Amino acid sequence: MKGIIGTAAAFAAAVSAVPTTNNLKQIRQAAPQVTDADILNYALTLEHLEDTFYRQGLANFTQAQFAAAGFDATFYSNLKEVSSDETTHVSFLTAALTKAGAVPVAACTYNFGVTDVKSLIATASILEGVGVSAYLGAAADIMSAAYLTAAGSILTVESRHSSYIRASLGESPFPSPFDVPLDLNEVYTLAAPFIVSCPSSNPALPVKAFPSLISAPSNANITAGSTITLLTPGSIVKPADGSSQIYGAFITVTGPVFVPATAVTGGFSLTVPTAANGTAPISGQTYVVLTGCNTTVSDDTVAAGPAVFEVGPL
Image (spheres, rainbow, N blue to C red):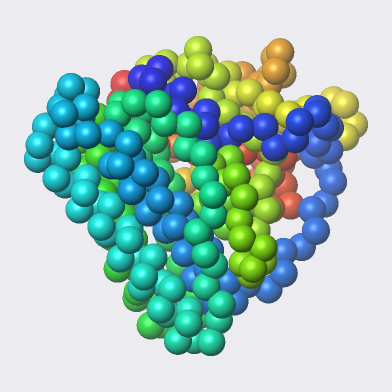
């Protein structure tokens, strides 16, 4: 589990090189109107990242190295299929954008921080989970029925990728009856640390990264009721009045679950809650943001995050 948590930290590298203060009462600028072309390019941005990730991983590590790390020939062959799927997704989205008269984004330059096969697969598991949440969260904003169906067909494949890789790591392939939707900025916050630079010719996307929030390396074997530490590297999160409560909001499809967060050195501590009966459980790949509001989560209320980590069964 510590290996997974360490990999999750790569999703939240410091946004800024110097500490900054994040005012929880500051109202964020309203996001511009998002078009279907924006959403398809957003999806293409993620698919380029996944496509490059798998192609680099398979180029950097041999089948023998996979076997030495405990992944047999069947897994290696299936991972090549996963890689092929991501390449096909890139081609499909590129063609769809071109046909619609929009300029498709090109691949960026990335740094995945992968050092061996085990870290490659741990990162792949998180990437696939984020991909599922990205498509699920974007679905409500897609206006075209044809695009919605196409995005849905990719979502189901990403979900199968996620289940297969989770099972290969000894995790439940389906840890919850519900997947978690994330909005554009939440997903971009998780993806941005991997992106070194992008072509200047790429069209601008209506996304921004929130300040980083990462699960501390000391967090291990997390379950409901566990007290965990979330770090805020590169920023200082505090209420504008200096005394109001800060909350951790666990994102679920049935709505966020809020818990009080207590300031500690470098971040905050909080307790993983148990979701109420009739709501989505907090289990599997989990996302939490910091906020000064305990009624809603939006771009106007998120102060940092999301952090991503695994919540296992009791």
